[in-house]
Structures are given as structure tokens and as C-alpha cells.
Image 1 (tube, rainbow, N blue to C red):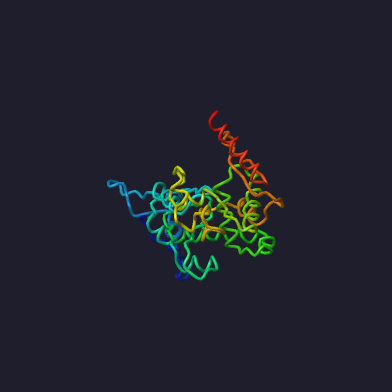
Image 2 (cartoon, rainbow, N blue to C red; image 1 turned 60 degrees about the vertical axis):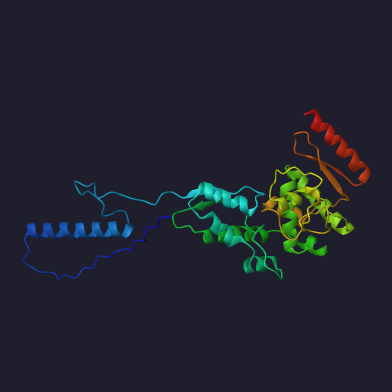
Length: 299
């Protein structure tokens, strides 16, 4: 990205002494000179003029920084997807973005962990203005700052009562973001996660398997569901080691304050609504799975 130097204001300093005996024409010329000096000083201070002419007349032309480019990250993207948007929509270096957000001490501090962590989850989804002088570091700092601003407005008291840290809540929020399409279901899905953690049974969330595979659209075959990854919540109990996406505020709030219910299961209805069937018993869950299959076949 090209960068333009910053202009500094120029002050006109008066230094002449008053002299008697000046005629009217001399006074007019002096006043005209003062006006020209002040005008020139204003032009330099404002940075409104450049030395470039039209090649013939030498007339000054006006220049201005191009307007910033809005870069929007929707909720639920992983950092690699954010890098792809950066490459497609801005002049920023996408690889530099990946390098800046990879596992390291910054992520470790933010997560309160003992080992390096990536910035996955802390890169808040929003619209950011990318100007001529914006760097990758500026963007990453803005995303982290946006997350921290939202975090301070969230009440983590209930989560702490369940021995969950703020980083745990962020992990749960990332799963909610990938699983839920209807806002009213966010707290219900959060409740299922809390209840299954308390019961000591695997979460069984397919989105975590897809994150391990690196492809949200991958067909979940039997072999892929057995992938040996700590993100495979069908095989391993507890939360995955980190967020699987970058969640928005609604999912963060739901993850910190789930619905107070005994729900243990949910399955997508597959009827085009984006909604889920919820249940407290496995028998009902199996019936819901069959209903979803029939809905999918009838579409």
C-alpha cells in the first residue's frame, strides 16, 4: 500500500517595523503581499495542494486520500476465512494476518492459558475501515479491542458458578455461533452444552469436527466422525482446546447465560427453517432424528 507523508502546518511570522511616509499604492501592494503569504501558508497547513501541475500550465491540483475501504467480517468465520476476505477486498497482506493471529504469547495471555494460543475467538466480527495507513497490526488490535469492549458488558457470574472461565465461555460461544441460525435458540444450545458438561458426556457437536477437518461443508462420513483430534467432541469429553470460530455478541451473551432447562439433546430439523428439535431424553432425540430425516427427504 502506498503511503503519503503527513503535512505540517506553516505559520506566517510578521517581522517588519512600521515606517512612515508610505504612499497609497505602496500600502496596497504590501497588503496584497500579506494576503498572498497567508493564503500560501493556509494551503501548506491544510495539505490541500501539491506541486503537480497539468504538464502545460503548471496549475496546482487538489489531492486527497482515497476513502477507507469497509471490510466486514460476519459472525462465525475462522481466522483463515478472515484472511481470505482480507486478500479479496483490501491491499493488506493476508499471510501477515495469519502470522499475526497464529498461536503465540498474545493468545496465551488473552486466554489465560499456559501454552501458546491462536487469536481464534478474539477477532471480533464487525465492519472495519481500512485506510491507506492501516496495517495488519492495526486491524488485529481493533478486532481484539472490539471483543474486549463487548466482554466488559457481559455478566460471567453464572458461568463462574459452573467453574467455567471467560475463555471457556468464548469456546462455547464459538460453537453456538456455528450451530445456531435462529437467535431464540442460542441460549437453549448453550444449556445443552452446560448440561452435557455437567453430566460428563461428550458434547457431540458436529461443528467442532468440521473445524478439525478445516472445511465447514465437508460431508460427515463415519470415518471423518472418528477423526483423532481434540476438537472431535464426539470422541472426547469436555470442551475443545480453543474456539472454533469468532463469535458475535449474541452468542457470547448466550454462552455466559444459558437457558435454565434440563435439555440434553438437539438436532437440526432440516426443514428449511434453520431451527432445531430439542429434548431431554435420548428416546425423544432418536424420534427427532427420524423426523429430521423425513423432512430432509421431503424437501
